[in-house]
Image (cartoon, rainbow, N blue to C red; front, side, top):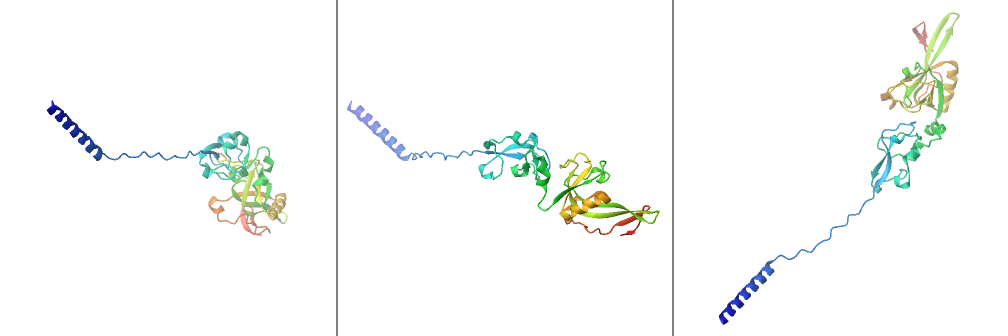
Length: 259
């Protein structure tokens, strides 16, 4: 009986030693590290143009969309949804300055609905004037109707020169060069789908040029000659031949000289 107790005690000691050895060789527990708190960024919704908006365009709801952005990208003048702004509030407003697709719509680039009469004045640079001249509604004096608002043109005066009793001659003279077209008729927005026709063309000119045009259209026939887009960037803006300059004279369909 004593032998059995001794054996049992020995086994217990061996088991305890093994348990102690396992505990000593076990890896130390890794303390739990709390996951870093990621700040929740509340996105802003900014009103942007759904497509390119040209000057003179009347805004429709489909022209504007809300776009999410971070608060750091918000700049003064942007229209924010959280401020209670609504797309319907801007419907019918006029675009004063061109807005690219995806570009934020700012109130300073718009003219509110009901103030259409002020659009032309708001679209004029300081020191410039808007003058309307009569044109052929069929496009005969506007390059077949392909002169559009925003294009640049030369203004040519066609006049008749009488020499003697039966002699008859026609003269062509460039009055103004590289003048910006503000509107054709009542249309101040480009129409890329078809030619634009009207009975008047509104041009952006200086005060002296305005006087020149007003006198010229009372005494002669004015025609707009469309300039190439590639020339518009390098040509001097509103360069004018304000003192009359040289007129090419055509008699019976033949260029006979200059005045």
